[in-house]
Amino acid sequence: MSHEATNWAFKQYHLSSGEWRLLAILADCHNDELGCFPSQEHLIMRFGESHTKGKPNLARSTLNNYLNSLEEQGLIRREKRFDKSTFRQKSTRYILAFEDGWAQDVDVPCPENGHGNTQKAVSKKPQKPCPENGKSRVQILDTNPVIELKNKPKTREDTHEAQNHPPQPDPIPDVRDQFEESIWPHHWRSGDNSAKAFTEFEALSVEERAECVRVMEVAKADICKQQSNPEYRVGLAKWIQEKRFKGLVDAAFALEKNKAKMAGALTLDRFADAELFKACEQIKGKPVPDVMSRYMFPKSIIDKARASL
Image 1 (cartoon, rainbow, N blue to C red):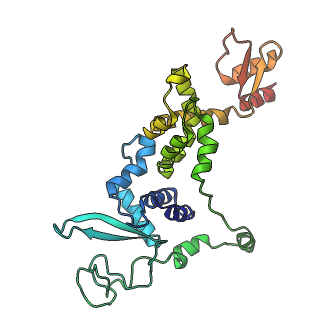
Image 2 (image 1 turned 135 degrees about the horizontal axis):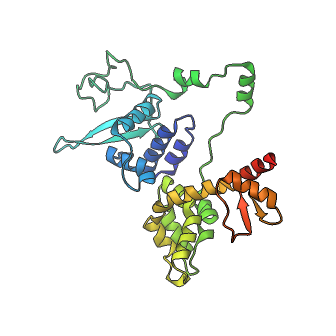
Image 3 (image 1 turned 90 degrees about the vertical axis):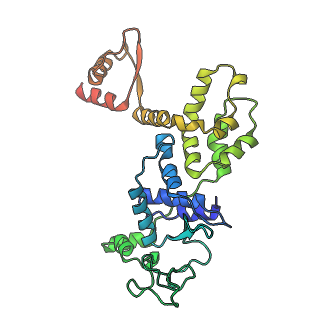
C-alpha cells in the first residue's frame, strides 16, 4: 500500500461513489517500487467483499465501465503486460496520475492499432501518433470539457460562492488516531496488547479499517455476552487478524439505524402520563405489555401523540 497513492485517491471527490471506491482500491494495491497490477478478479472481490462476506457482487462489465471512466478523466492509464517466455498475457498494469513520469502530452500508442512511439507498441512504427485517433484517447482532467461544464456555476451568486468557499475533500483519518480513538477504547480483554492489535489493524485495507471501526460497539457487546469471563475472550489482535468484524456489519447498521430512530426519545410513565401514554400506544399500533409501567417512545411518535390530544 502506498500512502501517497491513498492520499491522492481520496482527494478525487468529484467522482461517483463507484468510481471513487475503485480508485481507492487501485491506490491501496499500488506499490511505490513495483507499481499497481491487480487482476480484475481481485478488483471485483475487493469491491464487493465488504457487503457480501467475500462473494463478488460486481459485474465485470460494470468494473470495465468504471475503469473506462477513470481513464477518460485522466486518472489512470492501462498497460497490457505479457510473459516474455510464454507470450501469455499477464494482469494489466494500472498507472496512476500521481506517479512520476505521468504525462498526457506524449505520443501514446493507439490501444487498437498499436501506432505510436512507445517501446511497447506492437507495430514498431516510428515515433508518430495514431493516424486514426490522434495522440491519446485519454483526456487531461484539468481540460476535460465534460467536467468543466459540470462544475461551471450557473449564476453570479454561485460563482461568488464557489470562489470564496471551494469544496474541500474529506480528510483521510490517520491510522494511529483511528485506532486510539475508535478501536482500543472498546477492547474487551484486560490483558490485550495494544501494539500487537495496532499492527494487525494497520495491515488492513482502507475499506476494512472503516468496517472495523463501525462494528466495534456491536462486537464488544456480542463478545461480552458470549463469554462473561474476560480471561477467556478472544484477543483483539486475533479478532482483527481473522477479520471477524466482517460478519457484524449488518448488526452495526441496524444499531445505527435504531439510534437514529430513538434520537430524542422520551420515557413515559403509564400512570403519571396516562393520556399521552395511551395516545402513543395507538400511534405505535401495538400495546405496551401491562407488566411495563414505563416505556421509551421515539420522539416522532410522541410528537404525533401530542398533536392528536
